[in-house]
Image 1: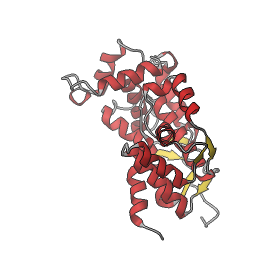
Image 2 (image 1 turned 90 degrees about the vertical axis):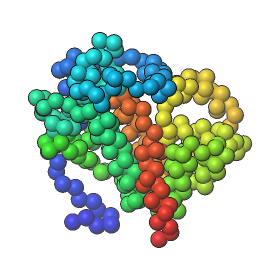
Image 3 (image 1 turned 180 degrees about the vertical axis):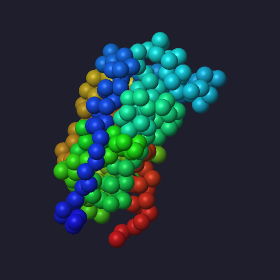
Image 4 (image 1 turned 60 degrees about the vertical axis):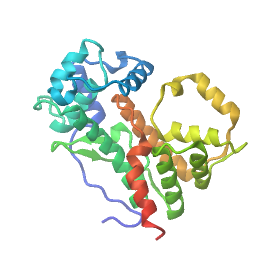
Amino acid sequence: LSTGRVLTLEYLPGPKLEGEMRRQMAELGMRVDESESMRDWIQRLEAQTTQPATEADDDEREPWRAWLGRVGARVVGIDAALWVVGKVLATGGAAGGAGGLRTEELRTCLHSLVEVHGFEIFVHGLFNADPHPGNLIAMGDGKVGLIDYGQCKRLEEGPRRAIAELMVKVADDAPHAEVAAAFRRVGVRTEHGGDEFLGKMARLMFGRVSVEMLEPKWHRDLHKTDKMTHYPPDLLMVHRVALILRGLSVACRENVSIAELWRPHAAAALDAGPD
């Protein structure tokens, strides 16, 4: 029944993922709004990247034991929140599901939600531009359902390839000059044409959240150096998707790089060549 202009969707049973996550968190006495601040969380994650693994790593312990051991130190951290997300996904929303998944498997569940939208954008060129948590269903078979494709966007080949190149540059942490050049090929224009400004803006939009990005002064100083004068509509909708998905990820205490998760699909679009 689907055509080039009409998309037919199948009814997907199950509760909204957002509501089910909150319900199970409440049952466990976990209140995300009272957890450590985002700044403290980001700083802790950055510190962890410089510390060697210990015998207490989650790969060596059952997830619920890892969570229980940490919850005394912080009300809700990345492992606890991910444990709940994974429990919802693994049990299809059943409150009494069997156990939880390992931390790495829980991250995989969340990353898949991000990656599938990269697949839509770069492989199909037709994507849902409104993937907020209320449009995700915790289905009974453990799958996550994507619903409400009422705000779709189609990308023609030129803009799709240009945005794909930008994703690859950001994912590979290319120099500011290379990222800025890719940004300009998408159609972005600035008052002064500064490479550093565009390089930082691209990372802000599609990379990981860093501690410095939480500082108002960082943003004020950045926008004193330059400002955008033209922002293409195609990129606007892609950025909207990235912003929503990164917001969901951060709410689940997973600091993702949208560009890194979208890179394989972006690279595939570039390798495919012009149609």
